[in-house]
Length: 171
Image 1 (cartoon, helix red, strand yellow):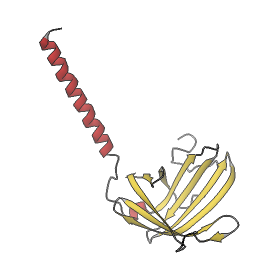
Image 2 (cartoon, one colour; image 1 turned 60 degrees about the vertical axis):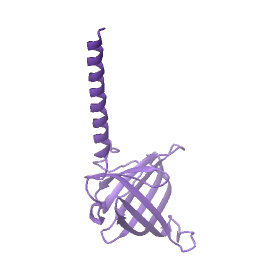
Image 3 (cartoon, helix red, strand yellow; image 1 turned 90 degrees about the horizontal axis):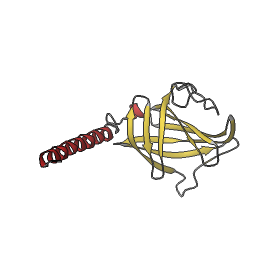
Image 4 (cartoon, helix red, strand yellow; image 1 turned 180 degrees about the horizontal axis):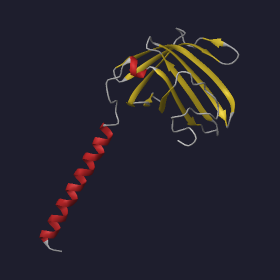
């Protein structure tokens, strides 16, 4: 191979590598919050689910009001059978590219209690990586989550994910 052909090939490789890097950076940059977060665009009902190590599926729906209250319902399911239930309630606020929840009350199907902290409040921070339409990607210090906006009337039921989400049959 001649020196001219080698130089030409190096230039093409560098150009393609630069194009690939630019595309990758553009894709990563576009997967951030599409607009500044507000109480309004984070409000509503958001459904998520994850597969647990014990073979169960954890499902949740988080109802966040524009007035700053939240109600987060969890169910752990083995197929269509619920094996765990928890409800967290409290207040939430948007802060830049994050939102912060302050849980004031928890309950299961038998009792209600306050968080076991000195001030009886449990504060969590969630960083939002992406919010576009009905899809929300967010994380806390331990793990990442994806949730989809659903109708406020949706009732959390094992084996029946809401229509319009990737979890629904035929999605």
